[in-house]
Image (cartoon, rainbow, N blue to C red; front, side, top):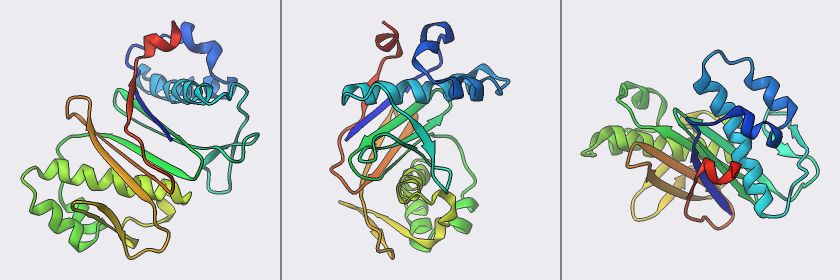
Amino acid sequence: MLLYYMDVSELDFNRIKSSVSKTRIKKSSKYFHRKDRNLSLGVEVLLNHALNKIGINNPVFDIDKYGKPYLKNYSDVYFNLSHSQKYVACAVSDSPVGVDIEYIHDIDLNLSKHFFYGSEYEHILNNNNQNNAFFELWVLKESYMKMTGLGFRLALDEFCIEISDEIKLIHNENTGKFGLWSVCGGDYMLGVCSKSKITEPELINLRDIWG
């Protein structure tokens, strides 16, 4: 597995436009704010960087019936993307994979009470840093939902994540392995789920990509 994350706040379109698809450029142009355009472009820049690492420089992207992008010309290579605020994240694996990165901010704990399992809500309430605990569960749950290919078609309360010495999935047969990290000086939470071996995330410098 390759697991990367990157700050795209200083992305320069003129430097990266040759390394992203016309479809992505068209999609990003619909965003009004530069931050949103940078995130849209940045996820594909990071993905192409990861694919180049494994010798793929001619990716052909398509969308499955659930709206999840995949590589049409490399059926044995799986990827997933995420972004939040200034950062994008990318996971590439030889089995289905899901990744989620989230900026940690103050939240209404009622969200977890209404949408999470009861034991997950208790985990948050019993934690000294409830915001961190919320986002730990959030990125793990979303990475699992993305790994299955269902996304939010799989309800947040249809399965339970248990965080102890080991991160485990409860009440669901479609199991996966999990990874969880606090990154960017503790400002972001990063989670990944895959049926393959999980590797540590690597921070990529955008300037190293554009040379």
